[in-house]
Length: 44
Image (cartoon, rainbow, N blue to C red):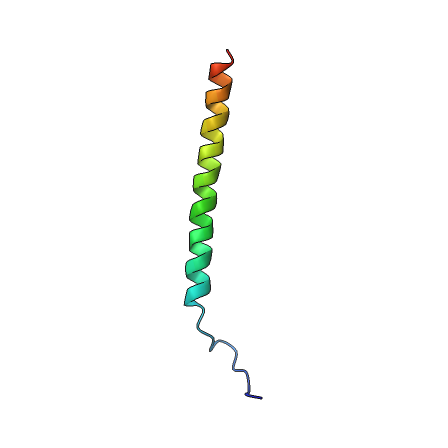
């Protein structure tokens, strides 16, 4: 088995995936807030 060297792993794919997840989460929260505001205004 090969020796593991800390800090030598290529994590670009994980960083790209995490950045996409954060971007998706932000858009989802904005959309949910917009829907809640619309529902509150439409119910008045």
